[in-house]
Amino acid sequence: MISGDVIKLASFVVVSAALLFVSRKSLRTFRSHGFFRYFAWECMLAMFLVNMEFWFQIPFSPPQLVSWFLLIVSGVLAVHAAIYLRRHGQPDSSRQDDTLIGLEKTTQLVQQGAYQYIRHPLYASLLYLTWGIFLKHPGWTVGALAAGATGFLFATAKADEAECLRFFGPSYAEYARRTKMFIPFLL
Image (cartoon, rainbow, N blue to C red):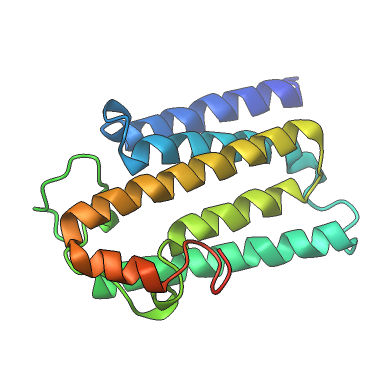
């Protein structure tokens, strides 16, 4: 019988290979947002695998309730943001930037929905996911991974903002002045 650790390691390798494939063009460009996002994804994957056996333990404890809240908000926000990017961002596959993946190749600055309050709803959803996973079973290892993911997500957002400023120009600078990065009215 194969041990749980072997299955976790194999899962990490397989999912990491898929993430590496998706990020292959971004990883060649150190300053691209996709470069940093890849490492945030890796931290989140490792966190999930470390904490997965605790996912449903003590389901009504305060950390679990906050965790589920963050995980649900993360999922809802990710779906909402993707819909708004597709509907209002007018993605165009002919946009010339090899580091962008399909949905990111927007040609219009999205300022509706969650985007009217925060500039990075998709990265915010990953931030909420990170801390939701952390709260499943807080510990030093998963805390270090959560801190790493958070740092990489901030670096991702900063790199993305530089890319958006280059593409959208002054309209993005004005948009950035009146919105927050991840949490409406706060951060």
